[in-house]
Structure formats: C-alpha cells, structure tokens
Picture 1: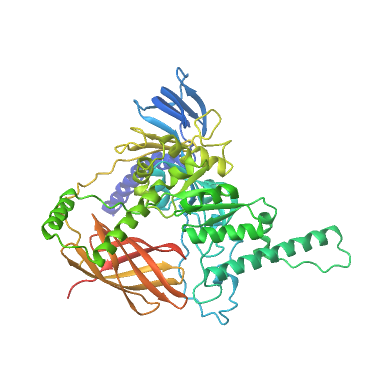
Picture 2: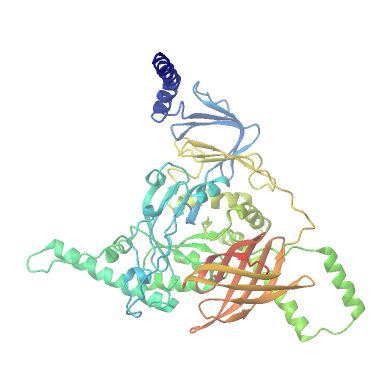
Length: 572
C-alpha cells in the first residue's frame, strides 16, 4: 500500500514539474498571437533610389513607417526604433502593378452539371453570365501565385474571376495580407468580360457573345431608366423587378465603372472596339498581344490598355547548324523546290511575327500611348526575361519601368497612393541587388503595404547541356477549354531532331496532325487544326516539359489561351 502511495506521489510531482516548466511557454504562445510586431519602421540605407522613371537618388535612404513612406533622400534621419536594411548599393523601385491577373483567385471546382434542357436559352450562370459576382469571394492570400508574382517585384494586381463572357467584377488587390478583405485595396474596380462563348449552348460563338452583350446592356439601360422614373413618381406605376445581372451594368452605364476586356488577338480586339462604339462604355483592354496593327485606333479610342507580358519563344540561333546547312547547300547546288521556298517563307513570317510581339511595347511608347502590363497569360518566371527582350527590341528602360509603375497607377486611378517612391505613398517597394533590368539581377526584398518579405535564394541546378528531353511516345493531356474540360492523347515521334505526330481530343474524337513542332531546351511548341462545326480552328500549343510531366497553354485567335497539363504514358 505504501509503495502504491509513494508511486502516486512521484507521478503527481512529475506532472506538477512538467506543468510548471510548460506554463511560461503556454503563456508566451497565448500572448504571441495577440502581440503586434515590435516595430513597423524600416530604414533602407545606402541604396540607389529609383523614385520614378528619370528620377534617381544615388546612395540614399528610404524610411518606411506604419505602411507609408515617410522619408526619401540623402542624410535622412533614421528613427531609433527602425529596423535597418543595409542595401549596400542595391536598387529600390516602387512596387510593380499588374493590370490583369488571376493571382490569388481560386478556380471553382468543375461540377457534374445536368444537361441544359434548352441550349438555345440556357440559365445565365451556365451561359457564363455572372456580372454580379465579386472576385473577393474567390481570393485566397495563401495561394502560391501570390508569392510567385510578388517574388518578381509585383505588389499590386487587378484581379478578375474565372469564367467566360461575363465572369464578374474585378478588384485591385495587394499581394500580401492575412485575409481576402485585407488584400483588397479597391473593390468593384471594373466589370470583367471575355469574348468567349459557352460550351454546347447559346452563345457559343463570338458573334453570339456580342449579340448577347448588346441585348443585356440595352435591357439594363431600359431597366435603369424605369427605376429612375419610378423613383421620381411611384403613383400609378408598377414596382420595378429586381435583377442583379442587369443592376451590375448600372455603374457601367453611368460611366462610373469601366469594362475590362481580356483581348489577346487582333480580330477579337477589333470586335471589342465595335461593342464600345455601339454601346459607349468606358473600356480597358488587357493582355493584348497582337495590338501593333491598331495602335492609332487604340490611341484615338481613349481606351486604357495593358499589354501582355507573355511573348512567343525566341528561336535560338545555332551557328554550327546554320554553317552546316550552308555547306550542304553549296555542295548540293540543286535548285530550291516549292516546298523549300514555302518552308523558308514560313520561317521568315514566323520570325517577323515574333519580332513584332517583342517590339509591340516600343511601338506603343513611340506612338505616345500610355500603357501598363498584364501578367495573366505569362509564366511568372519568364517576366524579367521578357521585359529584357522588349528593351532589346527598342523599349527604353525608363519606358519599361513606367509601364510597371507610374502608368498602371495612372490608368487604375492609384497615382495618389502608389507608383513612385515619395513621402506619403504606400510602402510598396521592390529591392534588387542590381538594376532590375540587368540579366543577373535578383529581387532581395519586397514591401507590400509596409510589410517586408525577404526573398529566399533557391538553389538552382545547373542544366546539363547534353541532356535531352525524352519526347517520343504517347502523352495524356487535359485542358480547361472554353468548351469545358477536354482530354486526349499526344503522340510524338522524333527523327533526326525533327518532331511529328498526332493529337486527339474528347470533343471531336478525331486525330489532328501536329505541325511546326520545335523543341528548345525543355520548351515544346506546335500547332494543329481543330475541326469544329463553325469551321477549322488553328490551335497553338506551348508546353514546358518536366520529366514525365508537362504544363503550358493552348491558344486560339477566337478563344484566347487556356491551361493544359499532361503526363507521359508508361511503356508496357
């Protein structure tokens, strides 16, 4: 009995001691959740301050306090509570602003929906008509896309929901914050739209989408006019019906809200201008890729424009192969066949098109058009390199910086809060170890609303110059196209460095021949023709191969670009 009693005493003593040891830690953990940061004051010293394009202070200091820039210059007094960041000849810029993005937006899950009974008159949500939807509903601050875009210097983005035709309303968000509400700087900043039809129901074609757009807009004008009439004298008038879809157009009709169109290709951009001309709304065009032939039209329209940061892949020169081909031509000394001439013409046109994409920003700048950039369809990791390509094609560094900072701030009505490094502006900053446009530059710190994010250096594996991507074989793919989820197989063959093959799809069940397949490093691009009831559609495919997997985009002139992923089928 004594042994049992002593054992219980020892056990209780151990428990008491453990609790005593843990109690301070528990108290600290409890308090830690409630404690504010020790300081929200930072001093960035000995830094090259690029206040705005053409405005530079060498080896100065920037002081940030409570989310605002409070001092900029040389000989600036540093508050005693400030955390000092010794920049040591680094460069600091105003945080970059993305004019069209889905950064931080969670894509709704695909549901097995019932077949629409009347495809000619489907429910609005099935047709893609959701202008009343607020993108804030889908924001997730923990989404990896927020960190990825912030890591290349962006601190603010104009984000939109997923969908076709009229997906909903945009918001201007900060790329930081613990909640969706904390991220939002300005809600309902634009009504977002695409000229993308519905799948197997009306409106399926671009012309159908335009007709539906006109119908909805004019119905909204009539409904708004009746509401005004009813408000002025209700006696003897039937109460107006409430309609959220039509009401979403009211701020557009009053020109208090612009319509933000994603418009990559020339033809769809011209059709967007037709809608603007017919209906008279304020227009923003974003993710524009083929806008160089209509620069004067864009300038005359007064539309606000954001050019795409996505560029087609450059064909890398191989001097040894070129010299070998020249030698073979000399030895062969045979006249060129029609095929040879056509192939050369195709290569020349392709090179000219790529050059036009890269020089588009320079052309807009030369024409005096104020523009920003859109990162929606660009791979985030490619953005710095694509900016350098634009600069190599004639865009000045000051103009590139303006398109990342002051110009989008102006276009989005944010100039009083961001776009430059001046006292009173929000502390949205990006710090790089060299000039941002230097090929070897690395982003070291990013400030969003005064919160510092230090960029951790990731170990980069050296590419084996002799390594080859194993493309030959069959790959299964899936893509979220305007017609819904499409699956199929890609079969590739390699012969002497040339690739050919076929691609199938679950929509038509037919195989299409792969054309113009080129492989550069791990990047594969090709095109194919999709046979649809409305005619043949050329689809351009760009894939990034990573071992037995790939991801990338498929794009058409009619529907824009959409994501695609795939895996290599095992051999049995």
